[in-house]
Length: 211
Image (cartoon, rainbow, N blue to C red):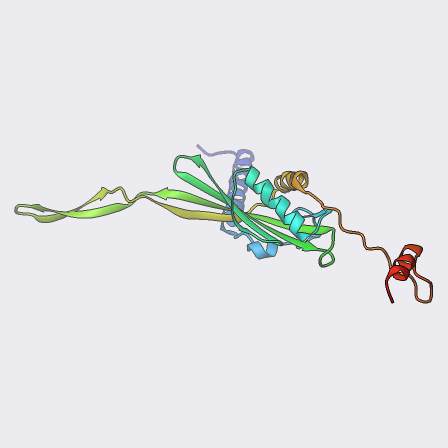
């Protein structure tokens, strides 16, 4: 029994469309994502930095206290650098470590305000069970090598990525601001202009000294 031509055309079109969709899917799967450095925009952003009304030492001290208040273990604490890390275990066989790095840089050396540059690195580890092969002697066959699981489990790093969430850093900067203690700087009176007599208090003090 032959199929009318009017019925053959829709079937052929459907077959062609299905082939085209399959080709597009295969080409999409075979295409590779661009390298990470090509996706780096270097755009002006305040995600990783914030200005504080304090000098370098005061800003980094506030960052150190903020990290300590959240359970981070501080590994480096200088006047312009703070490093700290914290461990998490979201699942029984998954381990996550976040490491903070805070760099404090005054806009003018020894003065304020200060820019705090922050980056957080997240490392993910997975539990890997160790297996060992043992030889067992069997009569006429000889020896068989049988794998068995030992207790030598270890954590293997499976991923490492810099945290880029703006809200994550915003919460940290707000906490740093709450710990910032700005001490008043001593005010030095200006020197009198040349050619003018000293202030009355200074003149009286000089007159009272023996010549």
